[in-house]
Every structure is written in C-alpha cells, then in structure tokens.
Length: 371
Image (cartoon, rainbow, N blue to C red; front, top):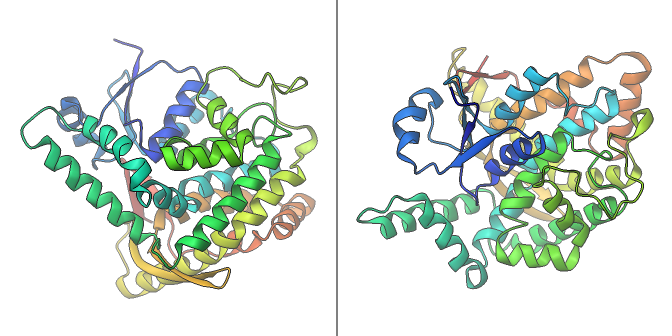
C-alpha cells in the first residue's frame, strides 16, 4: 500500500492552503490532486459527503474533509506537536486558527473579486484548471467564478463597505508586519495551529492573487516572507540570526502579537456577537435534531466597523472553531484562568470566550452536525 497521502485541492483555494502548509511543514508525503480529478467524484465524495476542498485520502483508504479536521487527524496521531502546551500560548494559537478561517474572509473575497483589471486573467487560468478538458469547459468555469463573486457579496463587501474593509485590512497588515519583524512565526521559532489558520487567507487570496500580492509585498514585506516561510518544509528564517526552533519561553505572548489581536478584534468581535444572536434565534425557532447538519452559511448579521454598518452571512463553522478556544479556557482554573482572561481583555477579545451558541457543533463522519 502506498504511504503517500492524496490531498484534493486547488492552488487558489483559501482553505486548501491551510492543510497544504501543514503537510509541507510536517514533512508528510502527499500528492496533490485537483478536485476536478475523476477519482474525487467516484472514490472520495461518497466518504467525504460534500464536494468541498481540501479533502484528504489516507493510504489506508480513509477520507478526511475540512482543513482543520485534516490537521487534527495528524495532530492526534503525532501527539499534538503544533499545539503549545502552555495556557496563554495555546489559547492564542487556537484563536488565530479561528480568525484565519473566518475573520479575514471578507478582505480575502474583496481583494480577489473586486479588482478584475488586475486579477481576472490570473483567476480565470486557475479556475479553468479545475475543469476537465471537455466540451463546455469555459462556460462551466465562468459559472463557477460567478458563484464565487456572489459569495464575496454575501460577506458584506459592496461599494459602501469597501473603504472600511480595505482600511481595516491594511491596519491588520501593518500590525502583522511589526510582529513578523521580530519573530519568524506567531509564537516563536516554529509554526503553531494559529499559523496554519492564518495562512489560509494570507496565502491563496491575499498573498498570491496579483492585486493583494503587490499590496502585501509593498506594504508588509515581513508578512510576505512569513507566507513564503509557511510553504517551505524548513524553518526558512535566515534573517533571524538568533531564532530558536521552538516557541517562546515561559508562556510568553509578545505585545506585538497582542496588538495584532487588538486590531482584528475591531471587526471579529462585533461580527461574532452579531452572528451568535442570529444563529441562536434560528436554533430557538427551528430546534434541529441532534445530528442534523449545521449549514456553513445562515441568515445575515449586522454589525458596526468604524462607524460603517456591515451585513454578512452568519457562519456556524466560526463557532465550531471558537468552541476549541472556549473549551481550552474553561479547562483552566485559578491564576492561569485569570491570566488568560486578563490577556484577552487587554486585546479586546474577552467576549469571544463568553459568547456561546446554545447548541454545540461536532464533526461526525465528515459533516458538521448539531449536538
């Protein structure tokens, strides 16, 4: 039996970048296949349940769908080597994982789809590669791209909100630039779970599509170097002459990283609170049975960012990832619990561990379901 894993993905996929980076960094042998490959439909989809990427096929024939679940599959086997063992670093790592998957989607969608004069040829080339060489390939590609343009609008990107979305993203870039000027990864000399979460939007969309790539290279070269670093198997940090191979000592979370969280909190916290209200209202009205599927997109939620009202879809998946943060906080006691809450309060993120859905979400046989 082959020991090579198969990663079904496409190079321009946001969520695929997370799993791919992990496999590269952990030196796990894999072959990447397009989701347009014939085997995806006939071999993978019956077990993966949904035609989404990334999806992993193991040498033993198992199928794991979703980037976070792919990473956790290997972490369980290998002893959670990418999860810091100390409380503050572990919770910050899990929080950045959720932020990467959900908190930068609006900027990622905006910078991909709202600059066609720069991005369109690049994107068309990549979306064409997903389609097999059959009649109607071009039309099918255009329909797929139109669906994704519509998704960008669902996240609240329009002519009115574009200026504030761009201003906030540039502030995030500036904060990350300051942090990656001092450390090669979020928490020190090696990537944590939070690094893999953040590479999702910051590679495929924001660090690879032509328009946002130039913005990142011009404004935040240290962030661009981190994007490169996250796609290489070695540490790739020669500019850090004294970098260690581990996370920072003594559960240290540097001020530069807390400042990144503080900037992101402006957007992430009010949106999370608004989404929780919408989803909890839906749960109260519909009372889904235990094991019923939890949709990725639900009714829109409204929130304020710098005086601008933004309305975007609500995403139960955000709260699936935040459950990990909340569970880690709940497991603490005494001074450790107090120290973590103080840290989160300092960067405006404390309410993230307090707002909860009235129902939990689990992954069961490759599907998100209500518990």
